[in-house]
Length: 243
Image 1 (tube, helix red, strand yellow):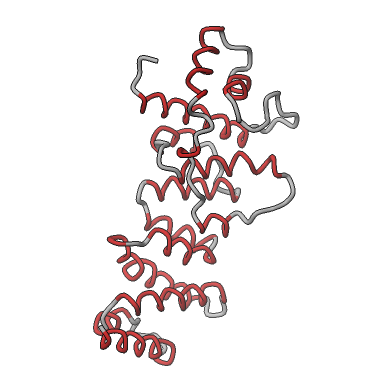
Image 2 (cartoon, helix red, strand yellow):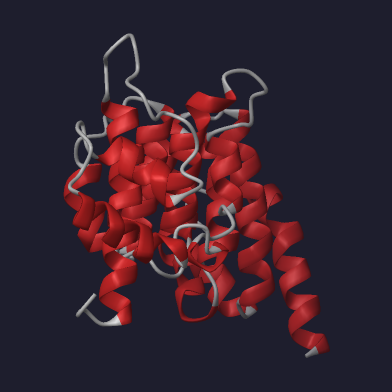
């Protein structure tokens, strides 16, 4: 209780996050007690300790949690691209609670990603939930280049939603310096990939709205199909004339 308010918040968020990470990495067929939603201080105390904590520690946690554990301001709305990576399912809702809560904490304004990063290392990227949580961590750290490559490798249908959400203001240049060249190269190598073609089309639309005609021409690949890019170049020219 001698810590500052921010220290208290971070300690509680770390404890809550560690509970849900434990749930995701626990391979035991029979889950231990206390596996319900963490809605109260008692829920956190019951699950975080195999044995009942000492009365002083239990009382301290209850005091701390009383005003923090259900505070919605620490949770954030899920980024739109997460719903593409992890579509909602009606079955096994309890199993989905742990990754959903972790995603929400990582999308929120309060949790320090550096504090929980060592815990996230234990989540395998082979699972969709592990993959999304690793991407969230990299995104929070501003590692957009690696996130683009991973999404294009594994879930290209989410790349435009990712760009729309994160490539704003000073980061918008990543649409054409990183995303557009990657999509052109991958689409050329797999011309029959409808998902990549759709992502390329949406990306070219964004770039044509943001750049001047001369800049847009510089971006068109030397071996690009003129019939594909000309309509977008025309739109770019018309917009430029109107402005």
